[in-house]
Length: 113
Image (cartoon, rainbow, N blue to C red; front, side, top):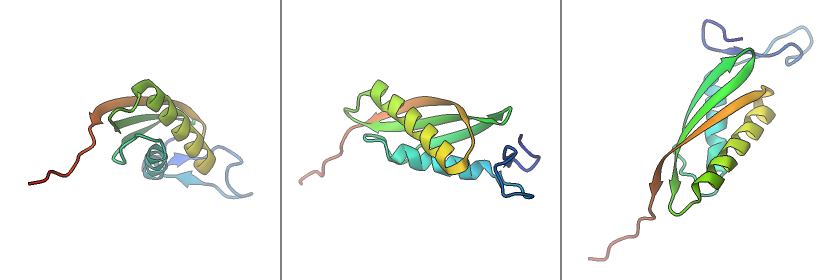
């Protein structure tokens, strides 16, 4: 459940006995963005949005790929890696990861003048 300050409250049992744990969406966003950088062909500048529905996370990732990365394969790899890393690090269940490939960047080579 999301609190007024935007933090996502952990499920019962997620914290220590007698305590609680809340992870701010900015932390989830950073974990997801780091996971994107682990995918071959993904540019390191992914934008991540975090939503919550009934205690589960819904993530939206917008990224660029390096040419000639296979878009479908890379998107599936991003979805899998983000889900695995966010669940492993935060303990939250990821319900969905929507991936938008916004650009394909060609390798830039230095020009000789």
